[in-house]
Image 1 (cartoon, helix red, strand yellow):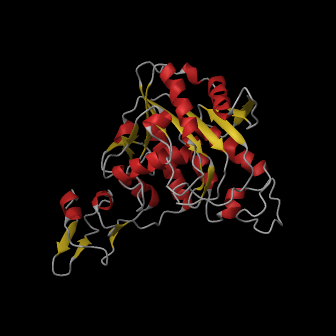
Image 2: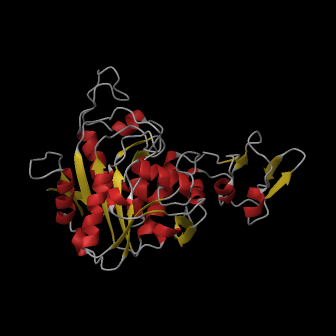
Image 3: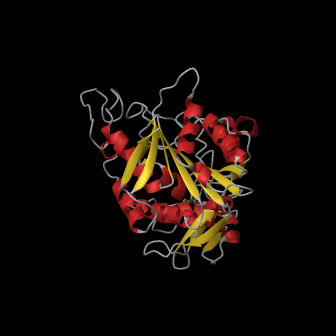
Amino acid sequence: MATVYFTNLHTSASLNLQGKMERLVRAAGIEKIDFKDQFTAIKIHFGEPGNLAYIRHNYAGRMVEILQALGARVFLTDSNTLYSGRRANAIDHLLSAFENGFTTTGVKAPVIIADGLKGTEYVEIPVESAICKTAKIGAAIANADIIISMNHFKGHEQAGFGGALKNLGMGSASRGGKLDLHSSSQPRIEAKRCTACRQCMRFCNYGAITVCSAARTAAIDHKKCVGCGQCIAVCRFDAVQPVWDNSSETMNRKIAEYSFALLKDKPHFHVNFIMNVSPDCDCWASNDIPLVPDIGIAASFDPVALDQASADLVTAAPSIHGSRGNEEGMLNLTGMDKFTHVHPNTNWRVGLEHAEQIGLGSTDYDIVGV
């Protein structure tokens, strides 16, 4: 049985929320890890600009101070997004992170985009599983010696909720890895956007793309395509599009396997911020009314137990009047699975069950108040 440590959000004149987080992670045993001269990745979501639900940089800054005092070589990291937006390449991604406060002044550590300029820098790690043969993990985080995840616990329109496993498995995947997680099909060409620039053809290692100059469009030979996602990563016009056809169950199982590949043989530690529990991912450029009141912060060496405990805390909490699924204030929803209620086509339990089956962690836990 795993142990999950939890603190509420009550503060005092002598103990603010950053201090409570520090007291929590120390009580949970973060100092048991030998950080001396180790490259330590803090895996965090920097937030899509316009969204205000992401974890404040102040918490990351305090975590950096803790780790640096323990001798770690710390950096903050995330991988580029598969979809088009302000975090789809390293330049835009870094500017977005800076806009949201993740600067060397704000967090006292460098920000490194894990899969490089265009999302093509990754390490393939064997998974040894029936679903994924390998996991395509952003190179910077794959090469780190220690992984610390700081996770905003909230709803997610495809996974059900996003917590430690979502931040680790999906968030650390390169753009090609994210294609693998989201889709069982090869990409498609959106002809109206294609300019026949041949960039996708040059970067295809399998000769699967040809370009017709007369028609001013590319074409993918799906008999040759292996679905690596390089064409999506290098297209400057969003003309190469993924096919979003993986079910919630399949995607959550793959996320568990990517998380397992990333964490195996490495020291790791995880913190969930169960506050501003918005119904959708921080990848949106806006955030809706939280589903429940702010609950607290939880930490554990076991990311599976941590996500299970966080989900149980949200289930036990009352819903907020006016939140998604309770717009008229007619439902309390205390004791109800808020995430499945809001996103009925998702199944987050499958991901945790699969994570437990492959040895990533346990859904059985004790919770210790701090």
